[in-house]
Length: 211
Ligand code: AMP
Image (cartoon, rainbow, N blue to C red; front, side, top):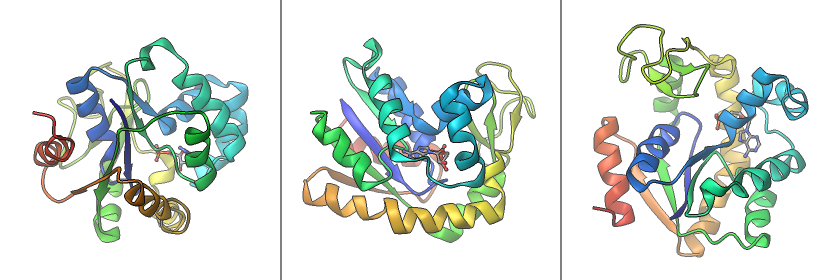
């Protein structure tokens, strides 16, 4: 399956992508995680992207197109993938189509902005593997330590409330319009983001017709 998880920052699309990838046996490709890993490793792409990521702006399309082309060409993506955080602009969506990447479905996790601010203020992310937690709704078993890889779990600089407000504005102006494009293409599956993680995961599976 080739899927796109679509939604606002903090909608929970990354958490759902991770659950779904375990279920479907295909990798979850999070462009945010790839960029954060590149920044931490001090690569050329990381150096180019850092100022955008920390201030909540979009990394230029030309960098993103290079990055996603390289990632989707890796052997683990042969049987499918779940895109988390890509595409975020019209040129990024067009680049996927131009490359002949056929998407089976776009799962849109639908949220209200007020919920996003509440979720992101409590979000914590593992610096090692990128796994997301929430201090109240989904805490790690041992405070501040990732369940999966044992690395420290901290707050992302771009989850600062002021940066969140500008990320949300950017989502509404630039990314959200892609939803209508996927709806017209007959690919959109809308899922309400209310309730707990397991409940939303059930809705995602139902929307995809996966049992
Ligand atoms: P995320 O973890 O998906 O919220 O992404 C974190 C940050 O990485 C975003 O705020 C952007 O700065 C950058 N980023 C991730 N994916 C993209 C993308 N597809 N296009 C441009 N910038 C991106």
